Image (cartoon, rainbow, N blue to C red; front, top):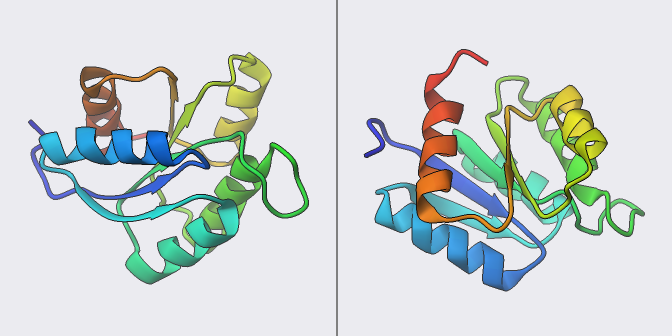
Length: 131
């Protein structure tokens, strides 16, 4: 079980995935403070709620990109808050994209499809590790 209060922002262009992550988070006593379907909304929600964890899809539209809005969103959230804890949750299997996300400031990476146990382990790692 998660040991401290986690306030999570869920960012994914798929409402199915947003709902799935929210449902998994609820079963772990993680408080989903907001969800967003694109990078622009995610940045606004981050600034409003200041969550201590973010799950971020990479393959979203946003800021003029067809499928790289997640990377730009990571960059902008980290620019706003260098201490942000961002867990990339993505179907993209290209290791370069994962490495790029990490170089932009993401703290962890989880491949879709996800399950509750994998999400639990990743969030625990995100919040408790000294990344």
